[in-house]
Each structure stands twice: as structure tokens, then as C-alpha cells.
Image (spheres, rainbow, N blue to C red):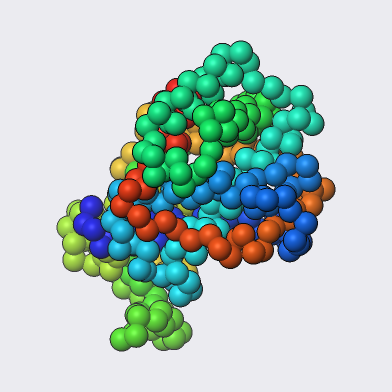
Length: 350
């Protein structure tokens, strides 16, 4: 991937994370800016607290992870809304660590605890992470190995409570529900893009001409012309073949495509983008369908979890230390390069 493209991707990822509603938005609606904090506290959610030092562990690790992948110039860029990407990082970290704190409160309510094995893994993770920190990083965080152990415990509990809440979500997912198909198509558009990049819909006369052109192509297919050759000549889409599953495209297109057998060709299908003629290249891909079943299962589990999580979150009250929050900025120090906090957790707890 070219660097410019990679930077666009990470901007999109960060912008998406900034819009997370499960924690960031719901939590911030209940934030009360206050001065009633102990020294070093950044926020409270009910009886759970987060220190500035804990927050900085998340911030520095996530900052360095992005910089290792995309370079430090990433923070010179802005989101599509014109907001500095560095500010987006702050919000993303707040969302992530506040979610961990809320999930620990939920775990307490559900009586979810770590196993002895998990407790040992938290100690091992803390020892490994703390042992790899430079003196400059230890000075920045001002946390002990025991503090890191508690952070790993909370992170592990957050993951365990998710598993506890979704363990009974195992719906039967049929092959047809999960079916993934591969198709090719010829598109005759009913819109154009002007010099400013704006989409302009055809008028009724132009749409009628487009339909007539699509029907002309359809007649050529009936006369025995090869679909692929006609696609090269008539297709107005940048792509002519793609793989998809239900719910990923226009309903009319989906209905026509999923009604075809392999090598069968549809009639003219009208969509908001124009008139399609669709050929089914593979009506059933076993491997892709099995993977899609897993994706659907995970989606249903996530939906079930988010419902219970958000109901629990709605009863919580959050308080943010405004003065401490405004003083936090991404770290610009070559001696601070730690980026292994989350990867250590993943390697040990997997």
C-alpha cells in the first residue's frame, strides 16, 4: 500500500473510532465537569476511577502504534471535518479506556471474575511490559509493576465479561442466510459526475435513453453475443465483477442476483445508479459462506452485548477532570517509543 493511501486509511479508521456511540457518546452525555477529584484522577464513572497515568499508557501506546505504521506526519493531518487527527486520538483513547472501566463495573454486577490462570497471566504481562520500559517511559507513566498488573487485570475482565454475556448467543444460521455469491454485471448509468465531483441525476429523457441502451444490450445477449465482450464495450462501471453477501448492495440488485443460478443472466434491473444486467458466476462459495456465518454470528453477539451494555451504561454517571483533560497532549519525545502494551496482552491471553 502506498504511504498516501495508507494515511487516508488511518484517517478513516480514526474518524470512525471518534464516532463510536457505545462508549464515547453515551458516556460523554453524562460527563459533569468538576473539580472534586483526588490528585492524579482524570475521570470517574460511579465508583470506578481512571488516573492520568493510566490514560497516558493507552495514549502513548496507541500513538506509537500508529506512528510505527504510518509515520509521525500523520498528526499533521486532519479529519474530513477539519479536526486535528491528534484530537481524534485523545477522544479515541478516552472511549477505549472508559469502556474498560464500565465493563469492569458490569463484571462486578454479573459476578464475573478472572480465573487463577488469568490472574497469573496478568502478572506475567505486567512483568514483561514493565521490564521492557526505558527509564524515561517509567518516569512518564509513574506507575509500578503492580499498577500495570491491575491495568492488565481490568483489560482481561473487560474481555471476560463480553464472553460471559454472549456465551449463549448461538443462533442457527442457514447456508442461504450466509450465502456469498460472485457476479459480473453491465451497468448503464442514470447519473453523471460534474467537474466539481458532484453527482447529477439524469432527467427523464436521459433515463429513458439509458433504459433503451440497456435493453439493446439485453437483446444482443439474447442473440448470442458473449456477456464478457459486451461488458468491455458497454459497461459504465469501474468494476464488472465482485463478491458480496446479503445486505451489502441495493435491494433490487440483491434480489435479482441471489435469484440466479451459476452462469444464468438476469433481465434489466433498475437501481438508483442505473440499469444493470447481472450474470451469476458462482452462486455458492463454501469457504466464503462459512466465513460469513462466523461474521453473522459475531454481529449477533455484538448486538446482544451492546444492548445490555448500553442499558447498564445509561444508569451510570461520569465525571471528567476538565483541567487534567485539557493538559493532555500526544507525546513528542524520541525516548518514548513503547507500543507493546496491547500486543503483550494479545500474545499471552490468546
